[in-house]
Image 1 (cartoon, helix red, strand yellow):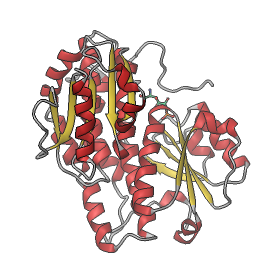
Image 2 (cartoon, helix red, strand yellow):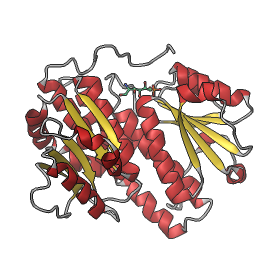
Image 3 (cartoon, rainbow, N blue to C red):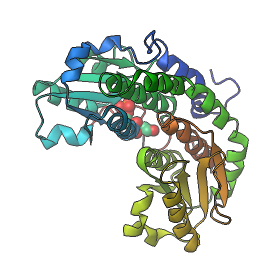
Length: 365
Ligand code: M6R
């Protein structure tokens, strides 16, 4: 089953262009400007009544919820709240009447997410699931939802399940946005961008040999930082989680601009930072944050956009992303940190597919 790959995680990383094609197959309306989600069991009129969304998940799925929050608020202008499923179930949060819930779970068996789903339903709310396992407990108990259709994920560290959750979050943002403020033309452009995700991901995967070389130079560190802003802050969290899970290097994901409020104290030649600095309105702010790290002699691996010029000396390593629409940037930006973590873990001789202390699906509290 592994073919030419050494690990399922490696196979699942490289399968992502095909997985993303599968996740979005049949999800677009014929007019090319919006989405189709037959399984939500909600009419457009019912969906228009919703004035708040709550997204719940654990681990990597929680990171995907944070990206969905960003895109839905940005494009659909509907307030979104994200919570850890494990916290939500005991928090007894006050909730508005016209709130719709989404739970995100690859396995559909995570007990905390199932517990949160039951709690929301007990309170009379509709709960939809984004899930990769047909017939799972979460699929059965939800009021409707969206299957990821990326096939079984074997590696304990989630890869293709995560990027497909990101892509579906982007398509949900489009769907709700087109019922509200987004124009036909902007919808068409958005759909084209989402459809280009597999090709964009393929272009990042082509850089794997170079990322492997970078990984060899960083595999001996004990601590690492992952920094990003806006939609790439959750991807910084995801990069840090991947590295922790499979290589046992201590890693922290942080919003880049928060560094000066404390964590910059950690920066030293012994603690490299992976930095997301894509093209965009805050590019110059991101460059200043990288310079603050460099001034404290921290090594920097900068993930930026092709064509962006970084001032000399700020990046020890540069990884380029193809230029892309905001809706797919989180998907594209995830690939380098998956590869980096994977190659670092391999370099350290770790059991990548079965990291210590972890199970693929967490069915205990
Ligand atoms: O099956 P789920 O999506 O509900 O799983 C949630 C987390 O346990 C899972 O994403 C975990 O964080 C992964 N090991 C991350 O790589």
